[in-house]
Length: 221
Image 1 (tube, rainbow, N blue to C red):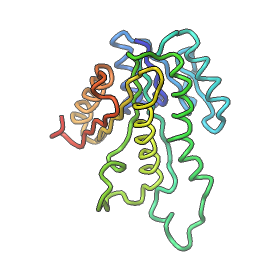
Image 2 (cartoon, rainbow, N blue to C red):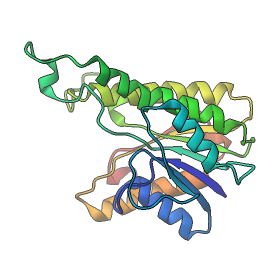
Image 3 (tube, rainbow, N blue to C red):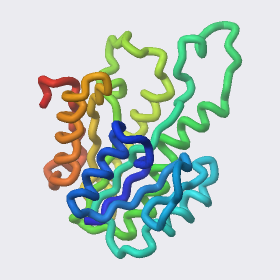
């Protein structure tokens, strides 16, 4: 399969990189677009300036130029999502509107823009996957991580975007969201979660269209 991952250029031990490495090991063609330049880019791993929409689209077009169909599109890109710290809500904080704009760009505008582009190379067997968070799903009476407003808001936007694409994309592509808990301090559990997430992405079918697969802990595996 031709698999396109946005945000798969991080280190080993993080989902994006580990997912891509496993997919390559299984014989899939993996195309990665990263927002941080590390190492030397090649035709299947390009870097874009995620503050420049034209550059993002140009690099995505370059990345996918050699293929006629995209079987799986995974949006995994994320970085600091303002506001995200208790100090951002104090009376003496310096408000950062540009930080809010960056949060909405990375979590909502860029995935929407890239998926519209990707749909031109998709069919009713293609799959689109968002990586979301339980903070955006189980938010009623939640006090845990209440400071992570930007991150939770951005991922909530992706959930609504996923639902809209699942119901209205014109190629019949399957669109879903995956909400895993990657505990990087528990290697065994991380590997179990990685394996479940990988299998869900590569094997999902139309029954998962518009569905959120949520993994909160070992009991869910």
